[in-house]
Image 1 (cartoon, rainbow, N blue to C red):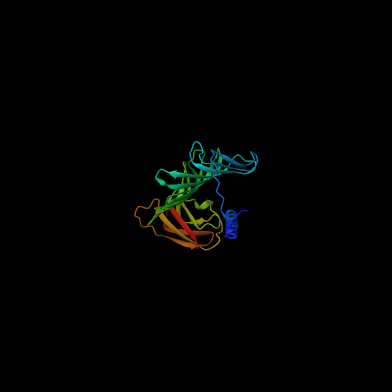
Image 2: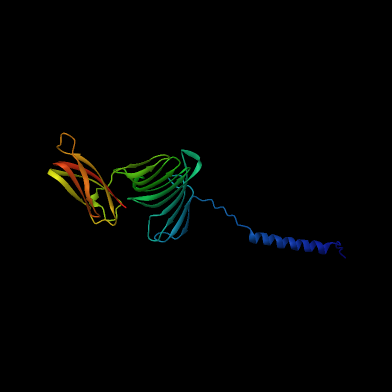
Length: 247
């Protein structure tokens, strides 16, 4: 006849409790799966929606996740990389599109964030916004022309041109321009491109064309929401440089 230890029932109960705790732990623990592969696709092939995971994209060598919408060969790409200037920092790109005309990009690196439109060669080709430790830039940048503001720690600068007042709408805040008045005149009416939506404050610079004594008297003699009048004391041709602000 077999002999059982006196604490057999206690041992069985402890084993049962240990099994319950083990299954409870398995049910509530986060699973960990490691998949080692060069590239993995979730979803069907083109033209269906799909997500492509690529830890070593060629030729960039960066880790990418590409999300392709239905019926498109262009993807939204999330790219993780490093920057040569900050080799120990992660660099993140979000790029929309990959067509021959270019794409748009969001980039976050150590101490800088910028958004821009790029051409097919990767250069600036449209709207641009940059935030960095030493400066911030907002506006339009391309290889042929640029028009933007630059903000530093103690100064703001504008690069580019201002539109001439003759082409601006009635809700424009600033109207810039210059006018040459030929012949022998004693005044001129400068008409805005439209009746402006609120009161205007014209500011002008005045350059005489023929006076030799430099004692031409001039003044703004009338102003409304659609025009203002400049008058001067000696009949001659003049150049008028104007800025008018809406307030």
